[in-house]
Length: 151
Length: 196
Image 1 (cartoon, protein in one colour):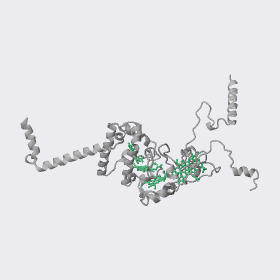
Image 2 (image 1 turned 135 degrees about the vertical axis):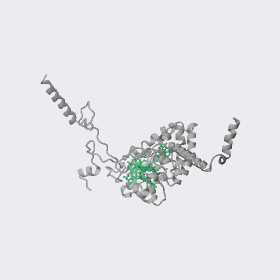
Image 3 (image 1 turned 90 degrees about the horizontal axis):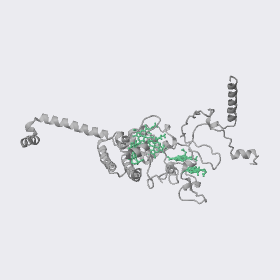
Image 4 (image 1 turned 30 degrees about the vertical axis):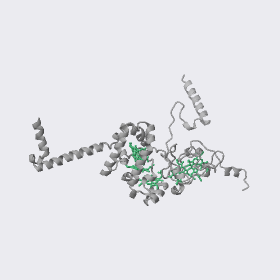
């Protein structure tokens, strides 16, 4: 009996390290399966109006300001009161780009296309927080460089 | 019985025969205080949040919406009551607003806005009353708490400072022109100036 318990513990430990090595439990931290992991602290939304680098030209830029209680629904769209073509002069906000006026066949519409109406589908606010998982993304310049880009 | 009525009638008709002038004017003064005080106390009561949100129309719609906003729930714990934004502090304006509000109470009693759907259908009209009022008084209620003279633009976000130092500072626009929907959900905004 006295021998069995340490043996069992060893087995368990080995089991855990396998799980950790496989990165299965990364977001949970190292909390045991039957325990509640510690929640990561919430970070406030940045409101510094500083744009971040986009990883590709087609990436939707992150929102450099807070959007608390900005109403976007069937009745009204607060974002467009600054970002629409008509409002850009008053608000000095960048106008939504021309892709926001295109339908899926590439036709240009007079108003923002319905598929671009719900802005937060693609654009998110900025937080100053550490990535939860490692990111190995390389942007196009880096890839070209590796291949010995003649440029 | 008839004699008794005659007796009181005489007092009312010619009080100065029965009571001294001093007593009369003092009595009048006293009653004045009582009525005025009572009136204002009743008015004060109608300003409390319990009264405003006592009917489910206000509780289930605007009050619940307010709870998500910065004026209810924030870092510093200072909050705005319904009456801070909706009741003018100056007395004549206050009475005028109450008379107008009686119409809204009427709406409650006779059920013109007694469901979410009916409230939503009326919301644009109700909101427009508030916008018009705040526009006319240069957003007085906002300014009771937010004083432009003490706004430090360097401490505001660049977006806020940019707008406050231009359109607001020049008096071209007032708070409600730019901050609609600060406390409640907005109705369909088509046709409202500045909205698409």
